[in-house]
Image (cartoon, rainbow, N blue to C red; front, side, top):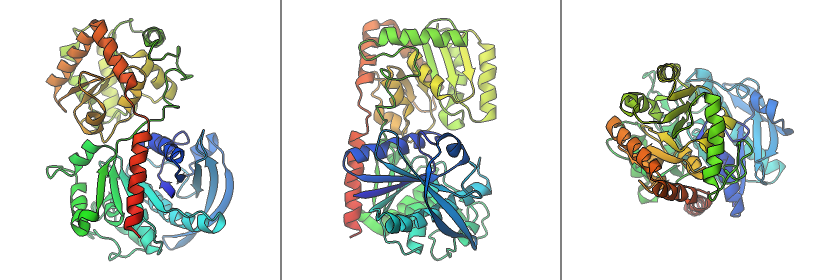
Length: 475
């Protein structure tokens, strides 16, 4: 079985969030189970500068009525035999575009056409033809439609990692792709903002749709869901009936990458037997760096965006300030949220530290140094942060939403609270503080957290089963 993964990020080469971690680790798990996997991402300048690759070919792409050259570069995912192809075009695939700029939509549309041409090149040049193209999020959601337009008969799967990013914009993109209104399934010409929904088109043209946890799959198919993706899934279900496969498959993490016993960034490495002394040594160094006293420490590690529920933390401070704890906030994102956490840290400088940047080494040190991690997300498709934290013996305090529900057992390996409730969040903090003071119970929870299996094995097996079903369905 040969599978091509198409995405816009892949760790360690380029990573903006959890998607990058998944694309950098799931193919390796599939390879371990006998699947021949390759990955394709854009070859951005920042990748060239840090991870230069060997050029192996070149293809021509017709986009916006012009012929453009795309260089093909090849490497391997670290520690594996998984091939990764980098597609390079200075106009469309060089700089990482920010926000929802028009150039960003053009970039991913161009990348999607280039993927179709890469499939031709792979078949002709190295005699490798994927049985399935596995697309990830809206960035590659046009690929199923483009393959059909190019008369490439190949099953496609679309995985939704976060439905809040759908790629809504001008139908002019279809004109650039030389795709007519009748080829697309949902066109609203004249409705300026929502003429085209790229993720929606991906759902309607792919052979199967998955998302990254079972609970998130239920949430986005709930008729009360405010997200417009619900209507596309229901339409697809109506068109194909029982043959349409939509399921949630929980993400995993690479245990070779996330391991407190081998992590070179830590001040002191530790395992399930030595976590008490190991975590304390890391805590000593991290808190000294942050100018905080050595006491029970909660952390927040993630993007500073509204989804992540930092407002819940801010609103709760007055109620939890009496607890003898530290709170360390690490991440970057929305400027207003960054300013708010800095203001909070200045107001409560003996209790709160805020670092508004992203640092892989420091985030790992903070995982190891903290006793609990705060995950008050308003929604969380899967979340890898709780899995990583538990791997490092750090107990999550998290919202009852999405993959957090599927990976955390309340009061066994973490604490769950009612999504969006400040009062329930405060109660969960109280439980955590009380648990920490009860050394036997705290020890049991840390042991349970570190022993919870979040390796890719089970999930990889589910994907392989899905691939087989889709291949059989497609004949």
